[in-house]
Length: 284
Ligand code: PMP
Image 1: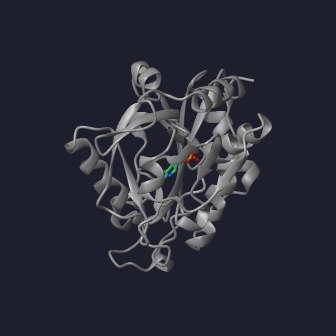
Image 2: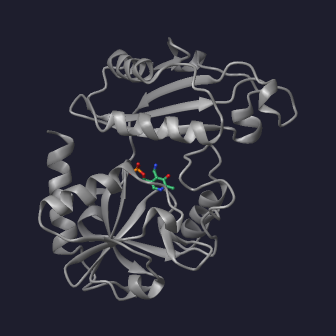
């Protein structure tokens, strides 16, 4: 039975319970990270923990442990579950409170660390590329809760995801309030045009993906110029290559958007090369 870390105690999955008065449940008041374990090593743990603390700081949510304790508890939980390749879900909720919004009335924030298997897209989709749509749901306006905060409230992304699955595709591109390309429901987006790698800037209202940053580094190290710039649907429709990045999806090519074929309809050479380099890096 998987062992879940609940506030520093390792308990069986079936015994890992929190209060129905927890504001994480009542209001989506909390933050989280999704992290991968490859060949027994946790990939980019420090970067994920840093983003977790930044998200929490934005929400004035005090994580009850210092960073090194969070890191140690994550590693301990991976070890307890003997997980060589898997997925970690690190969650901090506001804690048990009253039925009102006020977080000041909440007790201690709850720390939850789940280590489990990851369900990936089928291998065929990585070989052939996926199809996506553009969603009618826009990414959170930067003057609401910042899209940089990885909070427990994913409702607009969930609505976009439902729109995608009802259209028969696994993902949707979300535009921002200006009509620019932001990201997908749980992945960042990159395109290739005339050999240049382009991705929306953080100011487009996106989550600063750990995979995104890794891919930018890998591209630059392999001599590909990366441009963080505002992108529109025009740029997407006329791209030579298109791919998504995320902890779960890793790097996956997109070959059709809104029924239109992108590039030659197959994963392109720069995307394939970056995917190969990424696979080597995560297991190095
Ligand atoms: N955007 C959103 C909205 C996400 O939820 C995620 C997944 N956490 C990403 C992008 C990709 O981020 P990362 O590469 O850090 O997993």
